Image 1 (cartoon, rainbow, N blue to C red):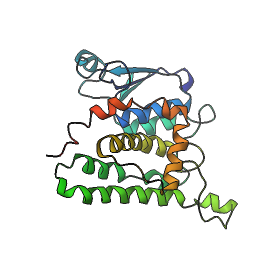
Image 2: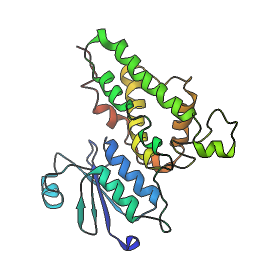
Image 3: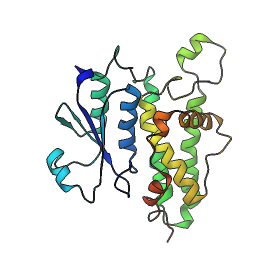
Length: 237
């Protein structure tokens, strides 16, 4: 059934109204479909000129949304669950994590980044930056810690060598976190002159490995598109 299904993914359009816009939730679903190897059509929705499309296809909704065999689905988390269920082995790879803790890794980074980048009070800058940095350190520690299956292979392993959050393969957890980390990396450097410290070797390795994956790299919005969404809110008073 899934192999012959008609799958349509609608994502936010960029300023040029054609390429993929800045939306980590859109990129998350885009990555999942690519990693699944599913056949689907991608439509970029220009929110400034799309009232008819939204009214006809997904009234009251904003991208991302999915149409599967004519059935509209609008909740990102539920779409992810649905795709993992219907695009299942043996025809499609399983993307769910073996270790449940992987699903929550880095969950506080984007929240602390947003507070840091949107802070308008210079007096609070250092405090916000330290809190943001601490969330990056926490993720680095998670990436350094071996998972149980790694210890099964090597009980003496003290530092993990896995490429991604859960294993050496990208999972749903990575599809959720990596689009946010990409925004963090681009915006922090350009607007706050903050770079992820090289001392966070596990996090640096994680990102390096991710950028080598076409399914991630191809779905990333262009840097100017990301920065245009943050320039106004990143200015100090």
